[in-house]
Each structure stands twice: as C-alpha cells, then as structure tokens.
Length: 335
Ligand SMILES: NC(=O)c1ccc[n+]([C@@H]2O[C@H](COP(=O)([O-])OP(=O)(O)OC[C@H]3O[C@@H](n4cnc5c(N)ncnc54)[C@H](OP(=O)(O)O)[C@@H]3O)[C@@H](O)[C@H]2O)c1
Image 1: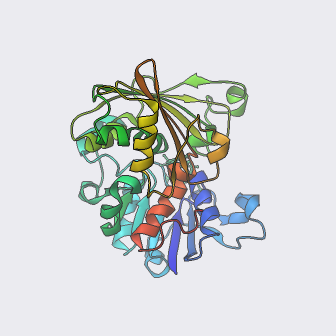
Image 2: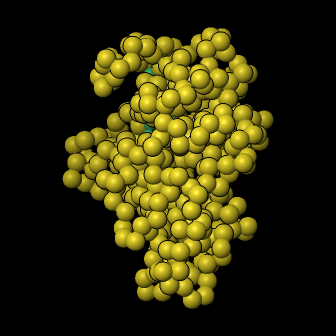
C-alpha cells in the first residue's frame, strides 16, 4: 500500500484527489491537511459523509515522515514552493499540483509569477508530469510538477503534429474555455455565480500564466522554439476544459491522415482517446480521459480537445503520476 498525504485536502483539487483515492486499491489515505478549513472532511464536503471518517488537520511537517510515502500537494502557486522542500526533506515523494515547479527557468518563473523562485534547487530536479511525454523521467523522480489543466489539453492536442513535423512552428493558436472550478474554491467577483451564470468571457488576455508553460513543452516536443497565442475563456459550467487549436500545416495533409497520426501516436496511452467528431465535455467530466479530434478545415489544421480540469487536468493526472512513481499499474484508481 502506498501511504498518501493530501496537502490542501480542504480545497477543490485536494478533495478531488481524496475522491479518486477512495477507489484506489493500492493507496491508503493517511494524512489530510488544510489551512483555515480543518476538522472532519465530511463536515467540509458532505459528499464524504459515511465514506471518510478522517479529519483535515493543520499541516505539521514533523508528523508527515511517519505517515506518508507521497504527498499530493494541492496548494496555490507561490505557497507550494515554501512547503515542497520540507515535504521532500521529510522523505516523501511529491506530486505538486501548483505551477511552482513547472517552468524550468527560474527567470521565466519570476517574469510570469512576479516573484523570485524560493526553491531553485528542487526546481532544477522537478520532472514535468505529463506521462504521455515524460513517463520514463517521472519513474525516476522525487518531485513531479503536475501540468496545468489548460496546458495538458493544449500539449496533448499539439504533440503528435509537432513531433511528426506535420505543422509549422510559427504560432500555435490555442482558444480555450474552462468551467468555474478551474479557479478553486474561493469565489472572486468575476467567477461568482451571479456573474458566471449564463455568461462567457475572455480573461488573461495577452498574458495568461499558462502561456510560457505550454510554450516550454511544445518547444521541447518540436525541438525548436514554438510561439503560442493562448486565449482562455470562462464559461458557466462546473468542470471541464474545451480547447480548439489552429495550426498551419507543413505540406499537404488530410483529416484522415491526421486521425491515423493521432491514433498511432497515442495507441498505447490509456487516457487519450481520438474521436472522429467533436468531443463533448459531458463525455470526459469526472474521468481521466482527454479526447482529441484532429481535422483539416480550409487548409488549416484544427484540433479540438476536451478534458476535466479537476481530473486529467489536476487530481487524476497527479494520481496517474503517483502510480508511475511507485511502479504501479498507471491506471489504478482511474478507470
Ligand atoms: N482547480 C483546478 O481545476 C486546478 C487544475 C489544475 C491545477 N490546479 C492547481 O492546484 C492547486 C490547488 O488548486 P485548487 O483549485 O484546489 O485550490 P483551492 O480550492 O483554492 O484550495 C487551495 C488549498 O490550499 C490551501 N491554502 C490556500 N492558501 C494557503 C496558504 N497560504 N498556506 C497553506 N495552505 C493554503 C487551502 O486551505 P484552506 O481552504 O483550508 O484555507 C486549500 O486546502 C493550485 O495551485 C491550482 O493552480 C487547480
């Protein structure tokens, strides 16, 4: 059994991690932590009544080493990097769901998040936790930087095309919509129900913090610098990300060829599914699947991608990474 601490279990992705781990045959929840919201988990989230009798406790790092083999760190960025070094020092492997260890270059982190990285030593060792691209490195890691929800969809949608040089590396356009849970449990004015209900708007125009993350990984895949124009929108639904990518083809390509390319690229991947028509959010929410539909429209390559921001975009992918870290079947708890 892998003993799992969920740090930030009082938040959305923390609670989602607990939900998935309850159905995991090789994982045992041993420590749930919160900051302001502590006490019985089932008092914080009534859906756990009769299913979880554990309390959410204030984080005490001195007690962690005895209790956990791995910590799923579900804290906000900027906070996470003050906590992860101590989780690692306590002897735990860490899957960090925040953005703090995703950007390899500390200068890019500072530019993007507006403060100096507090833990450059571990930043240098962190592995980007997208199993479809970095599975071998994840196996050897102590610290996995779980990808962002938008980046997961965009990178999975672009990777086969960039790897096989079927599109130009100029500017990749990513137009995406997320549900409200992507912003976490604390409502802001924009994401509060009276504003969000029956509404749709763009945000982070020109400078969303996920842009450098997507650029870093698609450039890795392409073997050269790829520019990304990423535009997120918020829509009035609880969960899910729907992204549409637009790219210039490299030479002639048909929709059928793209379908075959994606099928072959992801043949052995348990959580990527290739469709012949647009994916629907309703088919992927509460699952760890990302569905992709590549096609050609008016001579451009267009790829539609859908996933659940809290599962393949966060907690599910974190548990997929945990399974890889401990040599377990990667799909345990997730199918
Ligand atoms: N939501 C998503 O769809 C999603 C997807 C991918 C990645 N992520 C990332 O995952 C992380 C968690 O997101 P979330 O949506 O679960 O956020 P959330 O619902 O706001 O939960 C945040 C958690 O962190 C704790 N916390 C907040 N500030 C803290 C501080 N200063 N010190 C210690 N603990 C603190 C909170 O504790 P209390 O509530 O008890 O105070 C809560 O347990 C973030 O980095 C986010 O960017 C989220």
